[in-house]
Length: 183
Image 1 (cartoon, helix red, strand yellow):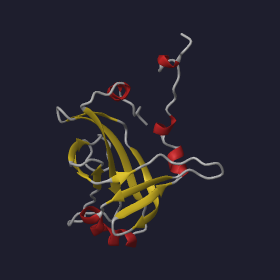
Image 2: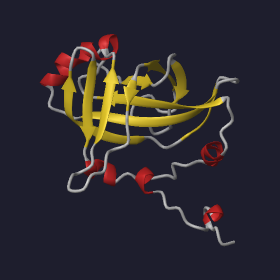
Image 3: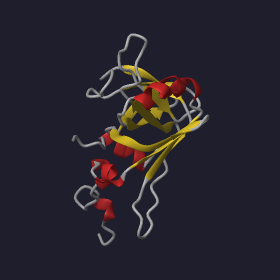
């Protein structure tokens, strides 16, 4: 896997100007999510109050390298709780699922396949209206999916999360000399 932390990303995280915001995005993939011609599509959401057109990475499963629209949909991905004697779990909740997700739910229930989530974070310049940098997407299957009239909620298992490179960034003195307080 490529190094997900670009130079621009590291610099922006170290000293974020007021005009730079992080855009958290989700892409939902499932064999039942298809267009009227039967071609696979995905549901793309951005946690913001407005839609954004953002460019996907060159190896994205759908529309690689294309500028695509991420629809403003409220969702939460809190850090997993760590408690002694319990396996940590990442719970994802997508609110206001109406027009974006409901049309695919009946078909999804009939097809026994995992719902894949691709999590991306973009740094966005609000003044220029452009993407500055992003991290390599994190992809994992959503398990134990619950659907209500207003939200979809599911969990990612620890086995999926333990194998993600993004969760194992090594902070050493060679790459982060500022960690040396003695010098």
